[in-house]
Image 1 (tube, rainbow, N blue to C red):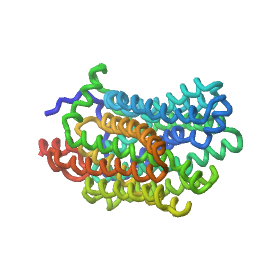
Image 2: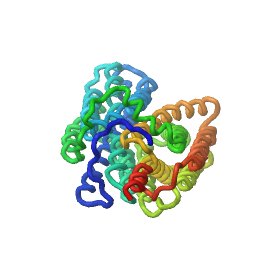
Image 3: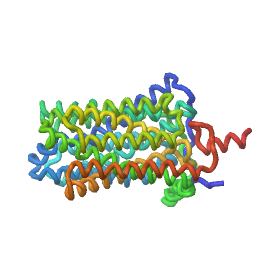
Image 4: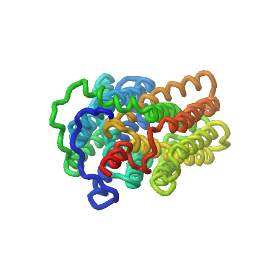
Amino acid sequence: MVQQPPAANPVETREAFDRTGILVLTVLCLAMFSGGMNAMGLQPFLVDIGSSLGSSVPAVGQAMTVTLLMSAVTGLFAGPVADHFGHRRLMVGGAVLLGVSGLGTALAPNYLVFMGSRLFGGASLALLTGLSLAIAGSYFTGPARRRALSIAVSAMSGTAILGVPLLSWVGDAFGWRWAFAAIGLIAATLAPLLHRVIPLTTPATTGFQVGQIISAYKPLLRQRAVVALYAGSFLRAIFWLGILTYYGAFMIERFDLSLQQVGLTYMFGGVGFLAGSLLAGGRLGQVDHRVLFAVATLLSALFFGLTYSVSPGAISAVLLLTIGGGFGAIGWVILNTMLANESQAGSGTTMSLNNSIFNLGSAAGGAVGGVLLAVGDYTTLGLGLPAFAVLASLTVWWSGRFQVASSPPDQSLSEASHNVQTN
């Protein structure tokens, strides 16, 4: 029997979406949306920020790398700490850090302060996204868990559909600083909302020690199937972010689109991601999860690869991006569902670690994509990055060999074990 470190006492779980459950899930979606908007909102303003701070566009662009790396590091500590003290406290802290990041970016007098503000943004991204998925995966049980995770993941699509266009509108009307000041105002509303709505767990009675962080991960390291799922998540992130990072430049250079037109193409991609997320939460999600992940990820790789290699015009490229984004979202929801179902560690530890691994893979994806472009062109990128999606599909499918036992669908292994003991 795996000895887990003391954890906060859980709240009452729900097998269906009652009024309280819907309210909790709505606030979680708002947290996911806000964290993602702060992280991705830099894209339209790289030129303006560089000009204002006396820096180059490539230097300002490194803020995204800083954000992802900070999020990855924060996630490693956030999960075990949240499982010990309760998720709500750290979620509120994430909203506070979001406000510091937004206002700090808006008021930054120079490049150094600007980059420091993005560090706070990376920490808030880890807390708001990783713990939102952790709460969605632990607050709901049974088929409702998969539906809750699909809805929470779909909230990230709102960043492309509404978040970035909204910030672009504010920035165009009042300047880029006001766009990030708006994020600070959103955080000021989000923090008390999280405090009021997210259920409060009773903290563990024992004090927290640094050694418990390592102990929290031991159950995961003993589960070879879960370790393989994390490996698949890392490989998938290299493919996913590598493809999306250079999509805007591809559309501008290949089809001579304007910045505003590129923003619209991201909106269509966000719609595809939203549709795929919601489909995964329905009957489609009842298909064997490893098979579904592998098929969806391979199809996403196919359509994204075609986007860069054979699309004859901008419209066909947007259509391929939208379809590829939909299949990619299905894979992301199913992967998170498998982790929630199979992990024997705390939900915060499980999901925050996956968030960290995804962010590390994302940073690697940007670097790999840059190398492929340096040695070739966009066709090389479209043919090279899907190889990581193929590896991710094979890794996740192969991980089924290591499953300890077959538990009921949408039920964690620890829950299944508890039911066997009590029955």
